[in-house]
Image (cartoon, rainbow, N blue to C red):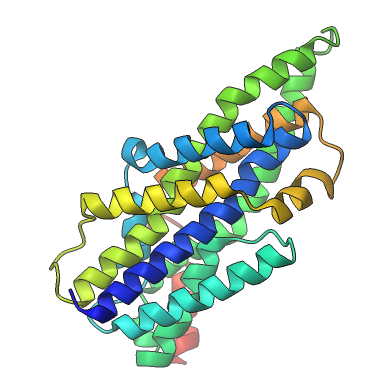
Length: 290
């Protein structure tokens, strides 16, 4: 492998470490704020579950990142390096100021931006971009609806319960946080897998998009390591600056997030062409082509 390829791989792993450090806040903030688990125990459980996520639930998201958004035949390793540098800088800015943001869409935005500067819009696969846009705009709405329903159902089922029900909600978070961490590992670690595999194809190290086992292992391990460190600035933001979180809120939030993330990973990336009555890609193609 060339020195440039090594630089891209190392940059991708740096991105993954920061991603794990930042996104751990999404998982552990509510369970720490609700005093269900100590911070260290919460981060430890999350890191272990995130590590095993890609091995248990597959690597379909990596394929979307690495082969469905840009044409690998038209871009270079310089494009990937620019994409990673931009994503790392943005992640560090949002971490420093305690601003929750999506590392996934930062990486995809960096990839699209760097690709368009390098070779133009014709290298963008609009059908793949459509999947990303669908997830970007529908995930918050879907999460809101499912979260609302889940919490109302929990309230209904526990309306005659004693205050001891809070102990059940605290202990139950062990299972919901493991499920949420699995979903994060399945989804987030695969972004780096896709970029690294794409760099291997561009450099000629391999010919087709198949994620090597060592890429899965290193990416999952790096993300788990970043998670174990913990992004405390974001944990404080998510855990205490929106509203006072009770155990019932925490368990409902974790369950909802796990359902939405796993559902997106299994369903949205596998939408076949023509499955929607309105295709946003058609609009973007018209914009780019005039």
